[in-house]
Every structure is written in structure tokens, then in C-alpha cells.
Length: 351
Image (cartoon, rainbow, N blue to C red; front, side, top):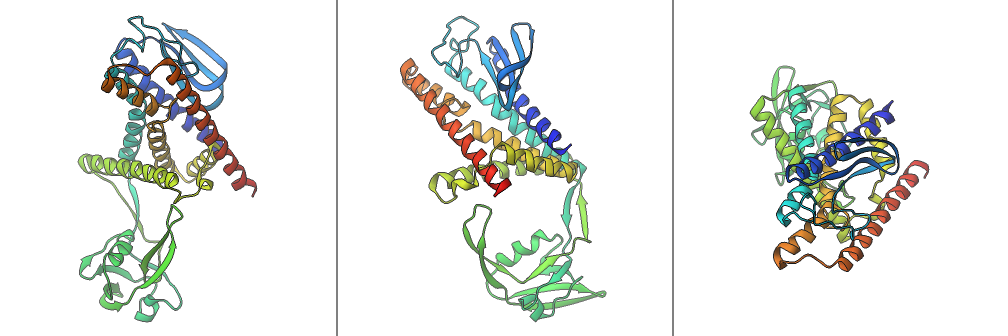
């Protein structure tokens, strides 16, 4: 069931991305010839108006083919009034941006829904104190509730690490224990570990774990929810941009690239963990699709945007030979990334 939900999630996100292109194209009077979910052999096709709506055999993406624009053959150009090519560069750019925008909008709506359902939070109760740790030496105990650090009020568990790492030297931790308020002075320990990008980092810890028995759910009002959704969408976008940057610079190895199997597997796990986990991960995938499609790679939306920006600045479009050559390079690069992701997926699953 989890795998079916994962495939459904991917199909819906791809459909909404392509729907963004479709609606923008129709707005500017461009004829959409094909709207396909998936690639390869068409399993089902129905013509509605001027558009053929299709489900294809390989569910790894989708495409909207507009009149005068075909990624499989960039030489197929039409200058009819209802063609993509006949539109001004700024209109084409809006059509291209509409797909990624739809992905960011979907993520924003999902985060907004989460804010209304209730954002899960761990309260600042200590669940476990590690042996030979600063917390144990200072007298901190399990079930203590941390209420303040250096005078700063603490309510949720996530605030503890932020407060400790914002200070240098000893910290004064106020805890509630048996209806009493106790102040403890603790000297944090510096540890070296790897962050989510696999980079070595240093941070301060005191050696405690949270209590999973003390948690709550925060429901936001409309304006707070809109702010939460905006901040989470922005955070997810910056994380993905940062990941790509670090991969290009070599700070993150290519073995971290995940493919379709990893996406399906993790989405399936998220669906089994409940609706909130599924919403969180679906929003992250949606942002991922939006960001990746904005990369300046020919055959992606970002590559076409670069072509149109060039035309706006220079006053002329790139030659057909250049377009064809760059598009082929783009497809080679995309296929290489897909093969790399699949190779890494197989290694994770069987290795």
C-alpha cells in the first residue's frame, strides 16, 4: 500500500507541475498538443479539444508538448500565431516558470495544511541522561523539565540545542523538578560530527535525550499558518539549493544522489508514519521538483529560461544548431544523473 501511495504522490506532483505549464500556455494562447504523465509508450490517450491527454509506460516524469516546442527535437519550430515560438520571450519565460511555481505552491499549501492540523513538537523534558556527560556531572536527571537557559525561556526541545550553541563557556540551566525550580551550571562538551551534507561540524552538547512521552501539537491561526508555510517552503528551497551547490563544489559526494527508488521508498515509509509525515515529505519532494527544474540545464525549464533570457538581451534567438547541440548535451546529463541515482539506489537496497 505504501508503494502505491508513493507512486500516486509522484504522479500527482508531476501532473500539477505540467498543469502549471498547461494553464500558462493556454493563457497566452499557445496550443498544447500533448499533456502526458510519464514517458515512453502511451498506455492511454484521450483527445479533448486540441490536446491529447496521455498516460505513458515509464512513470518517471511527464511533459507538456506545445506547438512549436519539442524537447525531443528542438528543430520542430512553428511560427503560427498559436505556437510557443511566436510568443515574446517574457511570455515564454512565464510559461516555463509556471511549472516550478506550481510545485512551490503545492508545498506551501501542504505546509499550511500541516499548520492547521497541528505541528508536532517535543516538550523540553529530559528523557535520558548519558553516562559521563556534562549533564550527569551537573546533576541533571531524567524527567527534569528545562524551563530556561541563561535566562532565556525554553518550551520546546528544539530550543535547547539552539540556546546551548548560541553561547560560549558555561551555561546556567533552570529546571523544574518535583515542583521546585533548580539552577544548574553546566560546561558543554564540544563534539565533532557530520551534518546532513556529510560535512564535519563542531557543536556543543550536554549529553541528554528528549522524552518522547512529553509532546504536544501546535495549531496555528491563519496568519501564523501562512508565515509558517512561507518559512518552511523557503527553508526547503534553500536546503535543496545548498545541497546542489555542495555537490557541484565536491563537498558532498555523488553517492548521496538518490533516484526514483529512494523517493518511492522514503515516501512509502512516510505514508506509513501518518498523514503529517506524508504531507511533510510530499512538500519536500514538490520543492525538490521545482528547484531541479529551474537548473540551467537544456531540456529542463531552467535551460529554456536561459535561452529566452539570451534572446531578450541579444535580440535574437540561439541558432538551431546551438539549440540542438545544447539540448542533446542536456539530455545526456539528465540521463546520466538518473542512472547515477538508480545505481546509488541499488547499492543502498542491496549493499
